[in-house]
Length: 360
Ligand SMILES: O=c1ccn([C@@H]2O[C@H](COP(=O)(O)OP(=O)(O)O[C@H]3O[C@@H](CO)[C@H](O)[C@H]3O)[C@@H](O)[C@H]2O)c(=O)[nH]1
Ligand SMILES: [Mn+2]
Image (cartoon, rainbow, N blue to C red):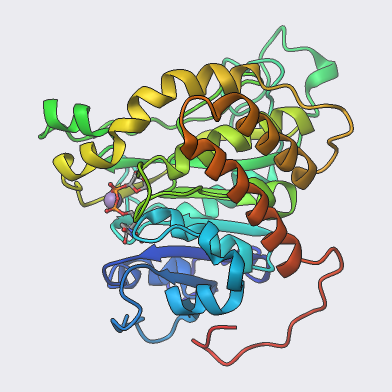
């Protein structure tokens, strides 16, 4: 129980992964909710720049030198100068659940003025089943004060395991650059008290700034791709991961939820810089979406790793002609799985507790 009385559910089973190229002062605002949990901080950009972690947090901090040291010849699969670097924290974690949050996301308040414990809501979403096969019009039937509605098949009411919980943002919405340019002053003030399962066979634009997932179910597919420095595209890290994750979750019979919790997203990144990063993604995605909609995985693909390697083959075969980049991305998807299996052998020995702050 933290000072404010917030209960820290599953605190031994959760890692909070934070990518940062700025600073970690935002943690002060989250102290009541995050202090009992372990943080994995992925410092992007210049590794010689010191990053100060506020006192009292239990954390590991990794910079580019650590990524190169730990992954060696595989380190090229982790992006540099893009929030995609966060997936290095997913790779290193040994916990069942991951919550990843950006350093410009703060505690939001619900309409009653109560501070929202985003991590607690994500864990509730992940601990309760999803309903991808039949839409419940009263939203998530497993939440307090609601249920399955009349006409909902009883044979489907058990639901399926929830692989991911996609939270939303008040204040600065996650708009693409063209929308940001057209609507520079638009702020999201609409708090919608709903959690819903994204139906099977439906893709969605996954934003990485307020996201949680079950690492044991789909950790191996949460690769945020090749973005940022040296790459022709940026700000499509979470989108790529979300499309891969959704088609594989559909195949494996897992669910994905979106809606609560909200965070308060405080910084609007520069739309002109964003346009430069995104523009290839904006037209490539008109080919990527039909590709993901047509993905079919063989029944032999019974694990996230097998699905992901099979998907990388289909990326190479079908998207390589869109641009050479996708051949490189497909190869790095395989490198990521090799790194995953190297760092997460099937029976991972319990690692001894590390002194606070040291990289492994
Ligand atoms: O080169 C970089 C840039 C940023 N980071 C860290 O990543 C997150 C997100 O950065 P930022 O808040 O500037 O990005 P947004 O435009 O608000 O959001 C984008 O980031 C992704 C969502 O997380 C998605 O692509 C867009 O929604 C912060 O923690 C930065 O410190 C970085 O590590 N390296
Ligand atoms: Mn941001």
